[in-house]
View (cartoon, rainbow, N blue to C red):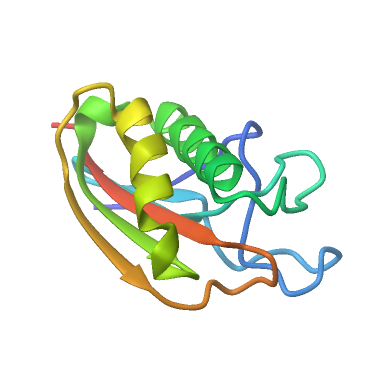
Amino acid sequence: MPKIIVQSNAAPVTGFTDKNTPSPLAQAIRAGDFLYLSGQGPLDPATREVVSDDIREQARQTLKNLLAVLEAGGANLSNVVNMRVCLRNVADFPAFNEVFREFMQGEKTTRTCTGGTPHRQGVLVEVDCVAYLG
């Protein structure tokens, strides 16, 4: 089964070290009935710059980017079966979770949330997910 690359202009392409070098990552790949999304962060889709230093604003932008890629792949939050969240500061968990609840609008998924160091300076949160399209 071939993999299908999914791209959305409404979300930034990540995985770059330098903005002039193309990223080796796909925003998402569809394989069979599953859609695998690369980690999305709080980057403005046009400038690829971090939108704010506030965790709530970063969480909103990160989840907007995630939704844009899901939609490009023919999915929405009701298709998501698993999410992984990486927070730079685990003390941000309550604020992130508040925004997460707003976005999920009652949908259920499995999720793991860990503390770590996202790849880019200033990025406080990164989220990836897997969606089932079958």
